[in-house]
Image 1 (cartoon, helix red, strand yellow):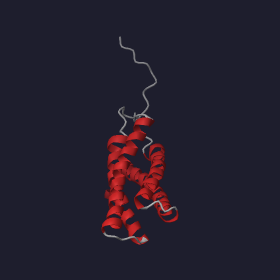
Image 2 (image 1 turned 135 degrees about the horizontal axis):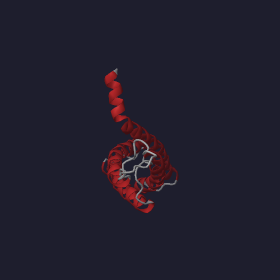
Image 3 (image 1 turned 90 degrees about the vertical axis):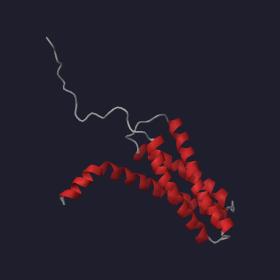
Image 4 (image 1 turned 90 degrees about the horizontal axis):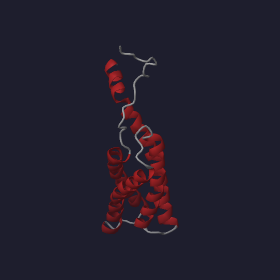
Length: 160
């Protein structure tokens, strides 16, 4: 039991960060999937246009959630810079979804909802791995100034 406690203490910040990232990702995934199906089935935008629309909206939600909750302790390098990089990296991650949906729809010629949604889930899975790695590396940077462990002494040191 001691080993498990030490292991948790060592990785607790990573565990909490991953839990927050996963929570935001789960809500963004539900938003993305719901919008994807709404745009494709109800609005008849087509599979790839629907994916772009759904991802743009869910990405905005994910940025706000990750910036102000998951990675709030990290250094803020400017909203414009972060937002630009976030969307650029999500654009790259969007390619995973578009490739899997496009391959399923146009190469395999599968047009049913189940195949469409499975392709989306596979693309989102690959995109999520890429996003987590890239957000930590380029968007939400580690703080450059170390956080003090304890408060400095209140007294003034006088050398004679």
